[in-house]
Image (tube, rainbow, N blue to C red; front, side, top):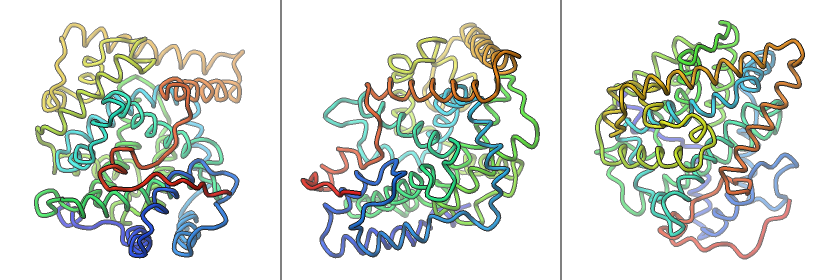
Length: 378
């Protein structure tokens, strides 16, 4: 895996480099603010380099299967609330234990914005959840769908962060390149294979076809995101092997991992709806990730309370399964209600505002990017 820590994303990196060579730093920030959840088309006055990037990366790979996409998105429609909990209690903590990869999040200073640590972390968590919703909602991976547009934009954000974090100090020899191929692939597996593993922990039963379909959706995301084809698994088994190979390669106790985990626990306890409902957030995280990882992250929990947290989480999953299979509760209605509940949770966690994917305020300040006065019209 070592070689992939020194490989990034040449296509997206070149787009940002070309724009910044022209001294148009404001344009980069403006683009990242405006190109969000854009289902009505792109702004008309895009620079040629950016337009070419969006045209080139908007297409599904030749191996994409629309029936598998639909089935994978149906899994999310039925289990979206549980998947949201798994992302925050399992997927994110298991990425934080990858010490070198977590350093990028730590170094960018998003936990130290003037609005306060919790506000910044809330924004990050909701961004992550909104990204997943956009990708896994029906139509998200259709031509120019929300999921594709969001993935393209996140890819540009990664390239922008790489450009500036190198410019203002980054030890590539020690940590590898910022947001490198290994880290991108590890995150991809955290959002796919680890989510399925989390559903199993909650006793949610999926068919083999449903699991493979869910992985298929995220294989497509990896392709659009610029993940090296060698790091896009062919199936669920390969996804598990890849995810744990990456985690084992980096797993270590670190200051940055502990800081991220501390902020995550605080977020879950004070803002997250299911965190308030189930309670015992450290116990939930230890149940989902295991004692070794939780200890490395400094997540301390009471063993007795952990058993209670496990019982409550599985009970909540059981209630969701019962509702889904109730004869009076048709599949389309259940899916719609699940989506509405998840969207409501996102608005709630975002303090009543729809979260937009953009460079955090701390990065704009650190990198001396001025907030654009003009707005690109679509």
